[in-house]
Amino acid sequence: MKARQLVLWIQGKNPFRSAFPAGLRARSERVLGQAKNWLEQDRRRLWGALAVVLAIGVSVAGISSEAAGRYGRVIFSARGAAAPLTGEVRRAAASRAKQLAAALDSRLDKKAKFGGEAWTSARVLVALREGDPSYAGRVQARRVETYFRSISGPECACWRTAPEGRYPSHLGITAWTLWAFAAYGIPANRSEIEFLLSSQNRQGWWPLFAGANQPRFASTYGTAAAILALHEQSALKQNLARRERLVEAVTRGASWLRAQAIAGRARWADYPAWPRAKERRELIGVSGFALYVLHRVGAPGLADLDRDWLANLPAEIPQARRGETSAKPVKIGSRIYRDDSLYHGLSWAIAATLLAYPNGSISEKARAVRWLELALAPGGSIHSLKGAEGPIAAEALFALRNHPDIAGNK
Image 1 (cartoon, rainbow, N blue to C red):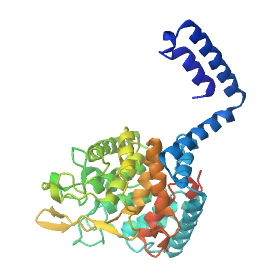
Image 2: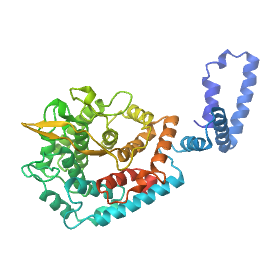
Image 3: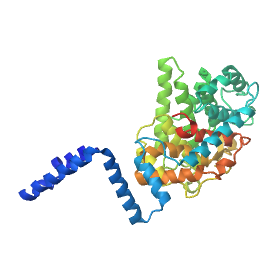
């Protein structure tokens, strides 16, 4: 609210004004008029007044100068702006992102096997493309397409941990592959899209392994990955009816995913319908990925969820190399497969926090900035990554590039 608007509001809409005695009301009119003229002469006076108020609040509350600076950056940053990190943190994170990008690019076999297997290759390709539009020109889309399709199946238009029948068809790996295709302008073919669409339950969810159709196998990660892949691929579909079919599947999936968030905490269980509640695991990597995806696909009504996320940031910064696994036994027909997918929490917690930040209150934003600065500060575990870690480094690069001041894509 501008100074003039503030004074006019007080003059015209204050419910207590009409109750003033006539003499006092006249005197208040003169004082308010003088205040309006004083504030309108120089807007900097208003900012100065706010700074004084902030300084008084800081001294009364006993907040440290570091915290005061953080609150100041939050208060005076533009509405909707990215989290205002210190220059030291931004420079260190940007340097790490540049180093990771160079290392991953140098290790990427662009003529044959890329990252060596489907899931690693897809994550590296997406991370290098994200935040760097020019990177697509450094990789031949034809080679990407040829490599991935050479290791698909064998009996489905999908991808697995390895292209052998003893591994189950993996919705997460398939989704990442189709996301990588979209990042390099490669439309998925009809059978690949149909594989994802046919695996969706009528309630909106996907399992992590195709064929695991019982409700207990509804997967948070599988659903999030599937709707993200379909969302990215929908932009490449020229046929309106096919594009609308993808959008409808994404909408149903996002609605289910949004409904599974644990109330007041913005956390997700790995398998929300698992019959024994005590065995459901809340994984920070899965939760951060779910919130990130909901933002990416444009799901509505995320403000409350964002504030819950910011209010419940992990008390300790996750270690970059530390992963979590669900380890749930998943039954497909007569066979049981263990979900041993490894989820790294730090990268997806950073990505989710950056997207949730604009919807926070001042105190929630300040807390988020502090958390991010601890996670990204020199000496943090994310700076120990060199690029040889493959998927861990790729997801870290992806997370870093979600901040415009770090990615350099303002």
